[in-house]
Amino acid sequence: MIEAPGLLASAVSRWGDDPFARGSWSLIGRDGTPQDRITLGTPVGDRLRIAGEATHPTRAGMTHGAYEQGVAAGTWAAGLGHRRVAVVGAGMAGLGAARALAGHGVETMVWEARDRIGGRTCGVEVGGFTFDLGANWLQQYDDNVLARLAERIGLTVVATDFTDPLVLGPARGPVPEGLEGELRARLEKAPPQAAVADVLESWLRHPAPFPAAAIRELVDAEIVMDSGAPLSWLSARHGFEPGVGEGDRWIVGGYRLLTEHLAGGVDVRLGHPVRRIGIGPHGVTLTGDGRTLDADAVIVTVPLPVLAAGGIAIEPALPEEHRAALGRLGAGRVEKVVLRFGDRFWPVHPAGYYRVHGPGENEICEWLDATAADGTPTLVGLFAGPWLDRLWQGSDSDVAARCAAVFTEALP
Ligand SMILES: Cc1cc2nc3c(=O)[nH]c(=O)nc-3n(C[C@H](O)[C@H](O)[C@H](O)COP(=O)(O)OP(=O)(O)OC[C@H]3O[C@@H](n4cnc5c(N)ncnc54)[C@H](O)[C@@H]3O)c2cc1C
Image (cartoon, rainbow, N blue to C red; front, side, top):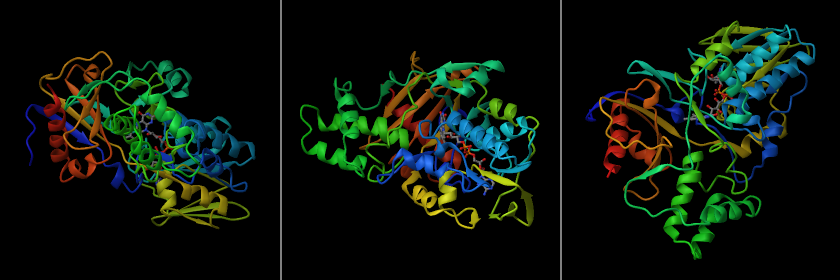
């Protein structure tokens, strides 16, 4: 076992290996456009609708986008007059759908594969307090339905300024003026079907007036960290969607305070994986692990890669447009680590955020100082890209110790 001096407790995510997630959040690949999200969420006849974060055209990859899509799907099913509706998945979208259905007096059953609710919001107890291994922030805070809910039920939220991280690790100069604008302009005017890697490659052939290393670093910090996807796959025009940096605030005590509230009064069956959905002229039938559920309609909120991998057999098969849209979307891998220490050994930074450069090329990770949660020195690290192969090996405590060393060794 690897030792991490001063580490009291830790937790590590495994979203990439999780059969009910198969990645972190949905993204648009080089052949795709936001229209694919709309197509995926378009009802299939009167009895099936896919919801979830991947179907939101402007708020994909975020909890409030997922919730909004769930509510829209629930409202759709109720509007068609269905009296008994099944929901697959008890994440934000599934809970949003179930609440909308209940609000219309529709009988609703949620089948959830895991033995917990929340999906890609996932609170874990680490050293006596709950922290998030999935979603952390309420993004687009001023225009976020879940932020309003958090306020209504009296949750404490803490602001993070992603635009002003304290940069740690091998000395780097500041991001050259105008570089970020130039990156965005090049991505926007990239030809359709170009990947981020295509834009980067042609730019690096003639980087002047910017240093090539600064361009590469900005892409690592802004795009690799934000997506966790291979740049040769990620759409140049559409791979960099809005969300991060728009008034983000994290919830003290974690997202579970929201999901537990939302699940109140909802009939959620945990440990009920759905393996097959049959759609007939008079209703739908869900089956899984020897159980059967009949309903008038079904709302499917499982993560996009689970659907794309055939994790649920849908019969008859989804229409060609839906399958094509699924094929043009995908997901990246961003993993998290929560580290609790006896002493605070890092500098306080007002933004509450740190960007750490590793010794290797393209190694950037980001850290939230979550000490405000309960006063115990706490760091939450986000890792993507080349780090993962090197760090996410062996037991959780080995991974945590390696991550702790990355942060500690970067300090001046
Ligand atoms: C590391 C990480 C950090 C993130 N950070 C943020 C953030 O700071 N802010 C933010 O807004 N968003 C963030 N996100 C994204 C956010 O978590 C998701 O967009 C959102 O939670 C998705 O909700 P959903 O309901 O669409 O899907 P999910 O939450 O994935 O819910 C789908 C549910 O379906 C279940 N399921 C899967 N297969 C089956 C099956 N066969 N049968 C039955 N049930 C099944 C799953 O177990 C799951 O509970 C982050 C995600 C990750 C992984």
